[in-house]
Image (cartoon, rainbow, N blue to C red; front, side):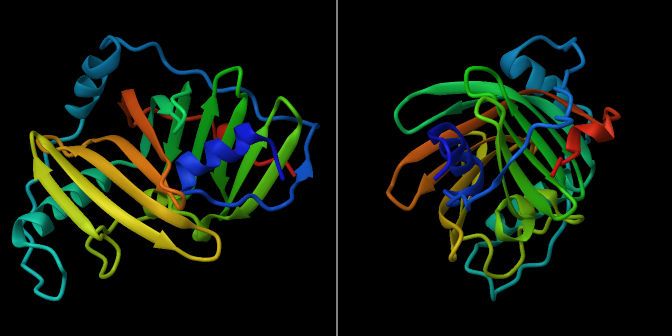
Amino acid sequence: MKTVAASSTLAALLLAVVLPAGSAWADNPVPLPHLRPSSAGGGAAGAGAAATAVARPNVAVPFNPSLPLSAEQQQALANIDAYLNSFSLLEGKFIQIAPNGNQSDGVFFISRPGKIRFHFNPPSQVDIIASNGKVAVRDQRVGTQDEYPLSKTPLRYLLSDRIDLLEPGLVNDVQIGNGLVQVTIVEKSNLVSGQITMTFDSNTYALQRWVVTDAQGGQTSFGIYDTVIGKPQNPQLFWIVD
């Protein structure tokens, strides 16, 4: 079993995936990422400024009676899809709060389709990198790396070429109110068991945070802020070193 830090991090991002045995890594580690300085300030102000970079979606979607969702819920999902599909590059900062209350933070980079990187600041020193159809969880403190298929993790929803939350059987519940849209997906497989609830702004449809509930009922929240859309990224950020 790998370190507790790597396991808890993966649970927060990938719905309590059980890490398989991996190989150590040491040579040619990927350079640490650096964010462009934010001109919009921190916290919610930064997130709000980034949201204006993409026009608010207003997509008409025909009601599908075969989905266990109301017309309003389906419309909200269509608008979220339109927003997320309107760009492929996103970066920002994150804060994670574990079930025991421990807090960690770092930076993230998304390049759709198929690429993402979460870099956790010390003391955790964990990087999660998705590229070329696989996900690597790298613990720089102890020099370990675990790999498994991207297709077996919920990251596939966020990193697909075209995001489609209206896919039959995908979304279990949608709650709309208080300026927010909360979308819940339940995963049950031999690798993944748990629930993820994503929270979007009901005005811009920008993703604000997600909460993961693992198979034992523990909850981990993961919030993003100071987001920047469309900034060119260094391809080396997504290298997975064998």
